[in-house]
Image (cartoon, rainbow, N blue to C red; front, side, top):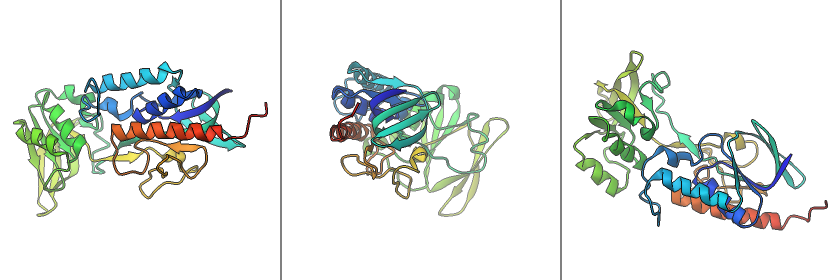
Length: 309
């Protein structure tokens, strides 16, 4: 069985930042990532609000984070976390490939896109319904698409889609956007973008692929069917915390609860990034969480009783 000081579950900005600080502190460190190293940042193109970044290109930013984590001896393995057990002062992490032993755990599993929950959404996922503009925009060249949402992600991804689609219609359940003012200004100035206010998507229709959506005005209750070639959903994220339900305390939304030093209610288990209960979920706060969690883990390990071996 392979043994580490710290195992970080999740390879997004929070996990990579934790790996950098942990390995730099001379702790034997492993990052376990089940999908793509970089997390949500890999599903966007530009990162304009990460302070001091030489490049705004999202892939370049995450590649640099990975390089820094590896430079101090951290390891990254593409394995899915399955189960966690604790015996004495050690944690045992079971993945889909192997079992590991460690002294501290950092949960940095992030979050995943929320569904609209309307009829036809799951049926047409991958057939016109998407949750990642940078992944799928190229399939909609010259077509008309719909974006659902009103926050930073929705407007930014809508702007990105205008590089490919002829028209991008943003549907928002309120009469004003929640996105940052600078992003809103770009959207309103873009001739390819249109807006449907006070509206929700009730159904997605098609014939093998998406052809139209049924939209309801929540103020007038008017129902309309609108033709569209694709639906991009950006209405928020759910914390990826299911694997930790039996181990640490979660809030009512499923976020892992912690103090300002990233301690959960279980000694030796720390948390960082978008899976944590906090005000702002951005790359800059994720990497901050990761650094704090790693240092807290280092201090925790230092205070463990000496290994009798």
